[in-house]
Amino acid sequence: MDGPWLGCIADDFTGATDLASTLVAQGMRTVVLPGEPRPGFAVPRADALVVALKSRSIPSAQAVAASLAALRWLQEAGCSQFFFKYCSTFDSTDSGNIGPVADALLDALDSRFTLACPAFPANARSVYRGYLFVGDRLLSESGMRDHPLTPMTDPSLVRVLSRQMRSEAGLIGFETVEQGAPAVVDAIRGLQSRGVRIAIADALTERHLMTLGEASAGLALVTGGSGMAMGLPANFRARGWVPSKDSAALPRVHGPCAVIAGSCSTMTREQVAAMSAWAPSWFIDPAALDDPDRAVGQALDWARPKLAAGPVLLYSTAAPERVAETQRLLGADAGPCIERVLAAIARGLVAAGVRRLVVAGGETSGAVVGALGMPALRIGPVIAPGVPWTAAEGGEPMWLALKSGNFGTADFFRTALDLAG
Image (cartoon, rainbow, N blue to C red; front, top):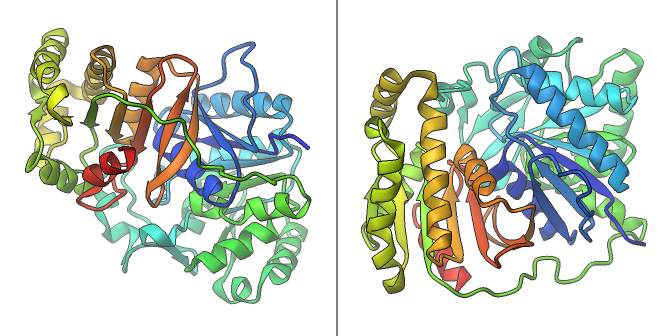
């Protein structure tokens, strides 16, 4: 039988590729569709499809509308189960968008219940007693407490979801998950009988995530970080629907390499510093973007002569105090302005021959993919947990790596470019 079987909706671009790489690692051929699929777009040959939205930080009503449109397209494509993917740090506010989107998807699927779990042990995200930990710190004590758009100051995901949804969230605790999938299924039935629509599930290890995936076989909708999807492919494989081999194979490409970094996360700052020590680098000062076209032109004039000699790095990444100053100077347009500039630089680099491009930052990645006009990305080999190389389907052959700000280690950029050959 041919797919697609699993239809996924991700609330940002790097989250989409993160999720897709998890599915590929479990044997599902996976294609990411940047943005809502265009009318008449042919369904790619794949076991799983991931629609990558930019819905994490927009008004809730817009996020709901975009998510429902993606759901309708995935239903028409033939998917039989659906996954709503958000960040492993549960990026949200008290009003949304995770809860409102989950409510709307449940209603559209005429479904009574779903699970929620952002745990991702490979990236030090775990959930215990409904509290989200980043490493050994509560979410509220991590760098996420200072996020400029979605500061996370409450580590209790049960409380967070209860504030966002029409009904209170439940909890499936560690002891239940430890007992295995049948115990989780029994807990789901008990919560459903009390009218609970969504429950946070504890998970400390990948084994717990596999258990939750097995227990989710009968759910129309599952929600979580990419780790929560880890156990879903086995359910389709058990039905004989996922016989794929070489699910991560990509066609090779040749040409110059470049890195664009827009994220200001702690890890991306370390990665920028590390690459600046061995490759030519150009800082795009966000506070000096009074003339965006000039900023783009200067960056490209600097980069083009250097491409033949090796990788180049162009970045707007800055420390928190500099970000705050930029926001003071540019106001609400600061983020979108920087994204437009970085996207235009990416377009110019590709026009100059770049065929392997690494992008750091979820919003930056979304802007770059949109600017390049790529209708679909096939997922390939993993660079670091949650970050794969992808190949453009349609248009100019090239590889893209889209990295969430906090993912990877300090030498991520070198690792990525070495893997690309």
